[in-house]
Amino acid sequence: MNIIIAIIILSIIVIIHEFGHFIVAKANGIAVSEFALGLGPTILKFKKKGTLFSLKLLPFGGACIMAGEDGNEDGVSELDNDKLFASKSVWRRISVIAAGPIFNFILAFIMAVFIIGSIGYDPCKLYSVEEGSVAEEAGLQAGDVITSVNGKRIHFYKEYSLYYQLHTGKTLNITYERDGVKYETKVVPEYIEEDVYQLGVYLGENAVISGLTETGAAALAGFKTNDQIIQVNGVAVKTTDEAISAIRGCGGGKISVAVFRDGEVVDLTVTPVLAHNAYYQTGMSFSAARVKVNPIQTLRYSAIEVKYWINTVFESLKMLVTGKVTKDDVAGPVGIVSAISNVVEQSKPDGVFYVILNLANWIVMISANLGVMNLLPIPALDGGRLLFLLIEAVRGKPIDQKKEGMVHLIGMALLMLLMFFILFNDISKLF
Image (cartoon, rainbow, N blue to C red; front, top):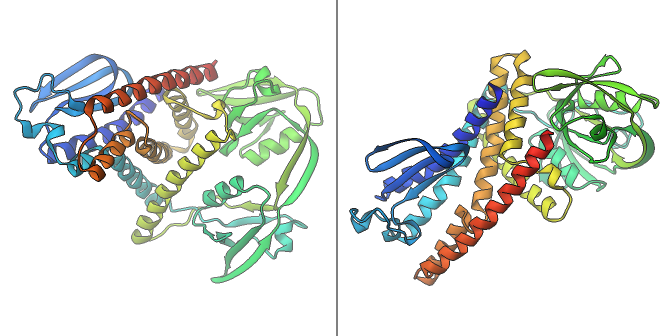
């Protein structure tokens, strides 16, 4: 059932994207030949007002095929020329192609409004400051709210967290608020070297494993991505910090770890490895408490939330290109479905409302991601088509359709190879 919910979530995001193309095409008088959900053989179809609506076998992706698109007029001979995509002005065609990603951003914004309107936003508020730490020396105290770091405006804790990860070890010129008054200070992260016990895993929120080193102790012991650590040596852990502390304090030798996987508790035995770690720390811990805001502020923070995820996509692409993340950090449709399924299962004890909230958060993240990726100037994607249309707008005449079609064909072939690689990578993580 959880997998079905996950597939439905992805399908909604794709439908909204394709509906953006569809509705703007119709508004511009362009005939839509087919509106398809999924890939592969057709398993269900019907025709309405000249458009074939179809459901494909593989529940990933979709298409809004317009009459006369890419110069192909097969099967549309009965249409008037003014109903063909190619017959419209370049700016009308640009609006149609751009509508898909824009609708993704609109969907992300609506979901963000639902989340923040329901439970508020999470300010970057200090929960505690470690005694003797560089943060304490800088004058920071529990309850302070960080509003700026090195000139970058901070609204949410996750904005600070992303900035800190991308600028590890850099001096932090911090602006913060205390009792309604703004202050400024400087925090120089402290470089720490120590020998600690570790499993060879990357932990995300709530002690959920987001990745494993291939030859690490956890991978060899049968741990998997998306496992949630819930117990170490019989002691319950609820947060990532608690899980890390329990593992580091094991003292060596085998330990028993219980993880939550696919709706079941799985008991594993692993021997942590003593490793030499070097890292920077500030001594700051942050509160996860959310603050309710009025309707106007809800709209403002929702827009900032979408902007954050758009920025995160670009930063992730930079890290991928520079080799700071590996293939193990990349997930495709299968990996996303698996992750959403686990989120649904983990949220069930908190009630239906929190299941819906967590799913809405995933929609914000994935929809913003899809919007950005489709705007990249990659052949066969919306961004690639927009690039050719913008060149046409500047030149005053279109590029030869056969040449453009060949570029998109090559781009599609390369994308298919990439999708196959990501699919294989997703499946390999499950076993």
